[in-house]
Image: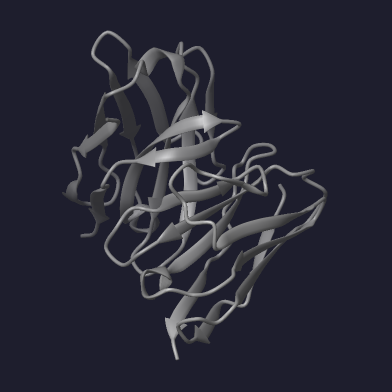
Length: 118
Length: 107
């Protein structure tokens, strides 16, 4: 059974950094592209960042490029999202998602909430 | 970037109704279009990928169609568990944009 368990969310002040983690199980982690998708309170879904199975290739939405860094440790079956220079607009639930292919998201974690507020 | 526009933003319907949701891309995306269902407080779930392929376990009352720029999600006979928000999503190229969502509510 595929499981994705996010952690690391919380309440932070604007300008600080935070790193999210996603522990994956139930599939061969290194074979799959993984992404982060976020959802601001009461709003729709926004794809944030993706990474190839090997970790060699990364992708970012314009809204986070230069501030967020996606990475993975295939030996630990874990996906990360380091978020720097956080803004109020980054407040959202962050979902870890597994890729079926062509950035089609077939499994989602339960999400971790990030609140950026002074 | 390719923009995805869903309509309507919300729809009231009754159990047994046929429901149709439309998603339009700002340029041709072939059939690289997915549909997700999200219930309150839950993570989204993939329903349909590549325009018309149902994920295993998804009821056959759900169907998808379209190509190019215009796509449709149809629920042939709405069931109580189908009241949710539905999102289309581009899988053609980065950024992998979602539509703004369509909330299907009980009439």
